[in-house]
Image 1 (spheres, rainbow, N blue to C red):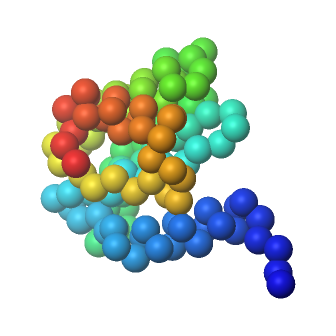
Image 2: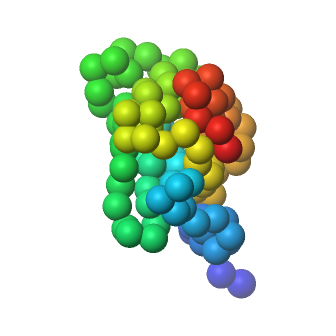
Length: 117
């Protein structure tokens, strides 16, 4: 019996989610990355292979916050940048993480910022 690490299990879940979720120019994909230090998100058009907008936890407006507050601010900034790029609707890719805690806070922040998914 092989030992499966947490990261290997997450990547397996990520591949399963990505088989079903794809971004288009009209509805790009919100890709989430969560680490112990912070959270980041990108708005990706999979058809053309382009990133339309991105937010990282190292940015000045986000860096001082921690936890769910940081995730919510990342979602709000992503929604703001999506509006500037002409996007108002997206699909959510949780990246193999549970839709709970910081990932859910990011999604709620993006919804409050005006994105629909």
